[in-house]
Image (cartoon, rainbow, N blue to C red; front, side, top):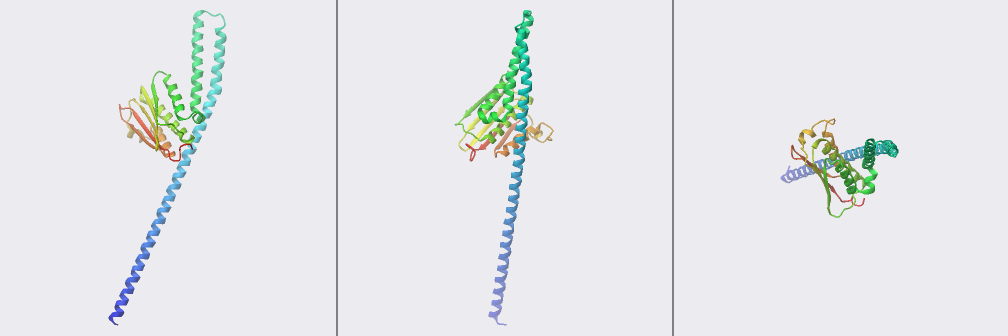
Length: 269
């Protein structure tokens, strides 16, 4: 066999091997790309499924709270109203001055209870947030807390306010209520501060108290039956609306929560 034939065979075999190698590389690249696309699609479907579950939980919770509010308003509110009417009747009857004074005080207490009950039922009703907006709903809730005279509250706004849409605002309001609940029950705080910052790219909600704080890592590693569940609920609700959630706390230094919501495709939705 001549040298030319040998060279031709070597060149041919090399070309075949190169083509085969190129084919294998292309095949592996396409296979890997499809695998990545499949993994991405699965992750997207899982995220959508998780969001739907969370959304359903929020809807069920809001519906339950609304029903509780209606029951309180209709039943307890009606009983208090009847009691107030009876006291009004007693006030008009000739009774000793000492008894009259106690009746008047009790009447005033019941009247205040009726007002507080109405305020409470409004805060449980998600339609309240839809009707009055996030800022006014939070202001109303803080006023109710301030009336206890155990806490000082403050709410400030920066930027020009805009709507985030009902779904985002009701979730933010529930997070706000969860934070307040933790502060009132556990923090021994004296001051609760709320800040709303309406930026061009993001909306920020900042909640803080000057309470005793807590060991964040320890609390969040508890099981769902313990106090860490409330913190996890806030984080999961933030995920539902695509918000970033940063919570900081340490013993003796209070608690700070910052929520950043991107406003792209959210303003006026």
